Amino acid sequence: MKILIVDDEEMQRDMLQGFLEKQGHVVLSAGSGEDALAIFDSAAIDLALLDQKMGGMSGDELLFLMKKKNPLVRAIMITAYASVDTAVKVMRLGADDFLEKPVDLRLLLDKIEAIAAQLAVEEDAGEIAAFLEEQELPFQVIGESPAMKELLSLVRRMARTPWTVLIRGETGTGKELVGRLLHSLSPRQAKPFIELNCAAVPENLFESELFGHEKGAFTGADARRKGRFELAQGGTLFLDEVGELPLNLQAKLLRALQESRISRVGSEQDIEVDVRVVAATNRDLKMMVEKGEFREDLFYRLNVLELEVPPLRRRKEDIPALVDFFLGKYAAKSTTMSREALDALVKYPFPGNIRELEHLIQRVVALARSSKIMAADLPREIRLSQVANGEGDLGARLNEVEREMIVEALKQHDWVQTRAADALGISERVLRYKMGKHQIKKG
Ligand SMILES: Nc1ncnc2c1ncn2[C@@H]1O[C@H](COP(=O)(O)OP(=O)(O)OP(=O)(O)O)[C@@H](O)[C@H]1O
Ligand SMILES: [Mg+2]
Image (cartoon, rainbow, N blue to C red; front, side, top):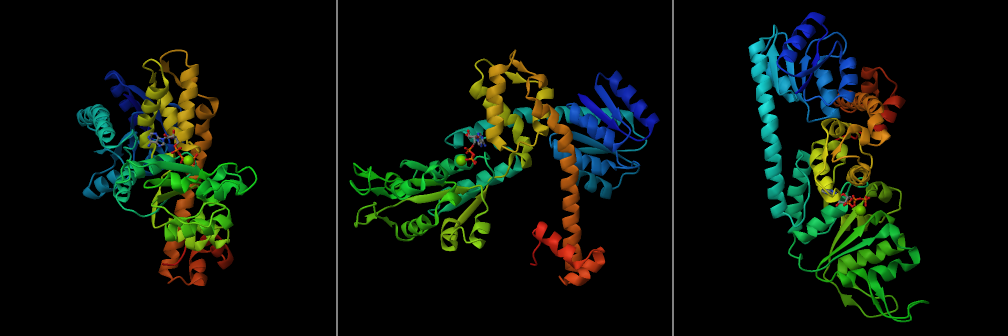
């Protein structure tokens, strides 16, 4: 295993390092949290041994930041004295185990062995779980992270209902995949799944795309044509990027949803449709409603049920399985990823989410020099992202802390802003600004 020791006492560090190296481990060490993070960014660490109490950044804080970069890392916290309280606290932070000072080396070895065994078992268990999922779901969906498991369980339940679902999520998170899943797991599965990307339709053709047209309805309409609603008869209509739907069509869509009737462009006749609508958006529709860019009544009609597909950076646990999945999809022969390369990928924030990861693997596979992909085969921006990424983490952490402090102060002062501002030592104006920034509202 590759082990990182972090302790501000040099003697302790050297002693542990010497001992673990003799056991055949690769050991790196750091005298402070800051140094540890720098090492963590550049090496694929399996296990971290952290001194809880250090000058500067504490072991707790360090663990929090490491887990944020790579939730798969294992950690043993070394504490001054152990108590139930410590144990609970340390576990909550995500440490796998803890040890009392002075460290009992036999015990340390046992714990390291236990972690190694767990790692091996989990690799197998992951494969078994993926297999079961594959059997149950109509196509393969990777999702072993808690965030994805929760989403999939919601999808299964929502699929059985007849209501419209609004899927929210950043670009490339898998909104369309979730839409297809809702259809494939629903009683409508044997009927069509029809997609319309609202961002890709020119405004003047929208109505015809949705509802169809009669021959001669407008110039260029030289034959009668069915719209997506009719094509989806009995099945599911997936309206992608629904926030791009022009306002005049929003009213027509609302009517179609409310009355289950449509009429083709150029026709007076109503056609009954039995279609379940699933819509997706990466925009904040609620905000668009407030700005008058999206009809409120349509919003509520679409948003009967809602699903949020989490960004990849909030389910980094899925990255290794997704990498395997895409390697299988794009690599001709069995290709694997080195630990260092995988480590760099797990640490990268993936602003383009799964789609970005998929394209990346496709590209890397095409250019790889051998069947083992090394960190050097990855694009520069991924190998180099880690420094900037680290700063981002600190910023995010500070933001969280700021938000918590403000909410706490407001609660303590019954949401009287003048008093909360006083307690925080900031002006009321700044408080209001920060409440806006963090979207803090009473209740
Ligand atoms: N959990 C998953 N397991 C396997 N593949 C996935 C998963 N989620 C997404 N993908 C794949 O990632 C790619 C992007 O997903 P999808 O098109 O559903 O995202 P999207 O949110 O609709 O993106 P956009 O906002 O860009 O339209 C697709 O090739 C999809 O098959
Ligand atoms: Mg999409």
